[in-house]
Image: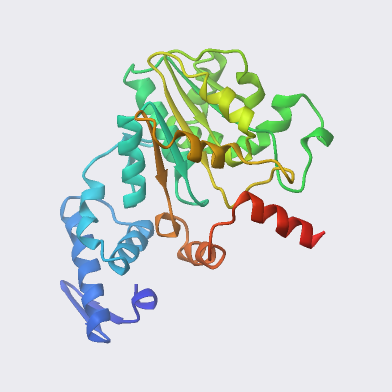
Length: 302
């Protein structure tokens, strides 16, 4: 907190002294008071909470900080409550509750995958859906899946590691394995979705920026009755070949006026990793790169 807000803090018993410029001291006071509200409610405050509070005070949003902690989504496999950590995450969670299809678009580290899996498990436990289906396209930067050993599922599984990690944290490894054996949880490449109608399911498409237009259309039209879909992606990390437009970018343009489809955009201020990660993301995003511009850049570098 001292480094981020450029202040010096002395804490003795119940007295906290903050030294520095007046504006910086006021920001520190607001952060400390917001964190103390959580402590007084019996919550354990950790580094991610401090990072979130500092980010929100810098964006003049500290008055909304405590509200983020008022709703628990679910408990993880150790009994620890899972809550949203940023305003962007809250918008995302609210959108999923209110819409049949939600697109989460933004940089890595904003919690898109973890929150999507959390919401899917919550819906399953509440009996709102009968199964969870998690998928992603088989495209990766710098590595052709065609040259990797094994069948398609074996090839794509290593790239679904964030999904497995989220399931293990929420359900535990044993329960996740049991649910997968019973096909209540299915993790599969996007190609496996073709020709299916997914009723009573919570369906998550990750890394959607690497879908083609036809793949995106194929996936979205799998939506069945009593189902929800989440489509996550980062349009700054498109690994498709040149002259191939991202299905995620295309979907933003074509589907923005459909009532039951919503788009939630995350930014660097929603990053819940180490503070330096947010700074790195900002440094790399002076302006969004359009598909056409991306092709020109690739041509120049070849």
